[in-house]
Amino acid sequence: MEIQAEVLAEDVRRKDDVEYVTVTCREIASKPLLQMFDYGLRREEMHHKGKLVGKTVKLHVNTIRAIFAGRPQMSGVLELSVK
Image (cartoon, rainbow, N blue to C red):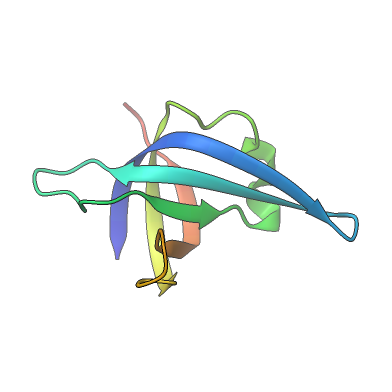
């Protein structure tokens, strides 16, 4: 599944010397999701850290976790959109 979304916020956490970056997004579509969702940056996407808030991205979603527990958590591949 592909989702075009705007990045609203970024959260950086550190645990056991490993850095985890999560971005909170909202879908941009004629009939968007009615809630925000989180996406955790993969290791090869960490160069985007600190640069995504306010940007439009395309997510190729493979898995959706925590659907019924707070914000859904998407995992897959992030691609910056041209807009």
